[in-house]
Amino acid sequence: MILLLVISLASGCLLTYLRYSNQNLLLSGFSIMKTGNLLTLVSLLIYIGFIVYNIFSKSKYHILSLVILICISSTGLLFIGVSALYSDKDYKVAFSLTFLVCYVYTLVSLITITFTRSKMLHIFNNIGIMLIVALTGFIFNIYQIYNFKDDSESYMQAAGSKKADAGVILGAAVWGGNRPSPVLRERINKGFELYQKKIIQKFILTGGGSPNELTEAEVEKNELKKFGVDEKNLIVEVKSNSTIEQIHFVRDKHYKKNNWSRIILISDNFHLFRTSEICRFNNMNVDCIASDTPLSAESRINFSIKESIAVLFFWIFGIG
Image (cartoon, rainbow, N blue to C red; front, side):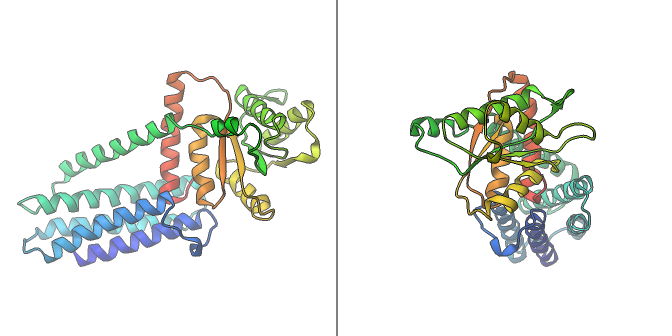
């Protein structure tokens, strides 16, 4: 049990370090109020609570069960440590997922062993319980994203008195002929709508692209110039390939340097929940305005499922 306690503490500390490292942040900026940090702390407290209870209880535990739990938790610790050695996102995700399965399974098994008379590990029963717990959390997360409400109402009620330092239009697909896709078109339109209302006067346009075509950001820039937005108010970022890279660009090149107090994220509603979580973890004050892209209920559910997985990996590992 003591060895399990040591492994759980090591896992929690390494997990927290990697969460900040993957965001290029220092641990000196640690805050318990960040979702991922809070999840780690709560799980650790549960872990430690049951271990301490079992250490001081007079029950006799099946040695083989404890050995198996130690092996599983050690495997998880090994995989989360190995993930720190890779910069490739796919490897990070694979190793991190293995750690998560080991960590949750050990926690579930520890709880069930505590309440069973035999004090033995029931492998398949615990797998079933783990899947039920994971599915419940996953469904709740999908519900959050599906029903996410942006900040449009607060800006409407302010009647133009509420403003932001800049609006960030997040990139989306570019079609042949360097045309914005319908999704990107709606993001651009929403950005210009905010510009017309004088809520924002400066844009950060993000998104890379494929060879031999304009980047997403350049297409955004061209469309806004057609609308009459002054080019000097358009900041273009053309190298990013992910939402996190786009947010890091805004954070490092503009938000901190210019001492901004608030920015507006402009994207599709299903995308804004995760993006706002990334920004808040990076100590950026953001509001969210959703574009008017029409989506069927089925499409919203599909996007919400994908975003739910992505935000989970961000919360726990700092991977996006």
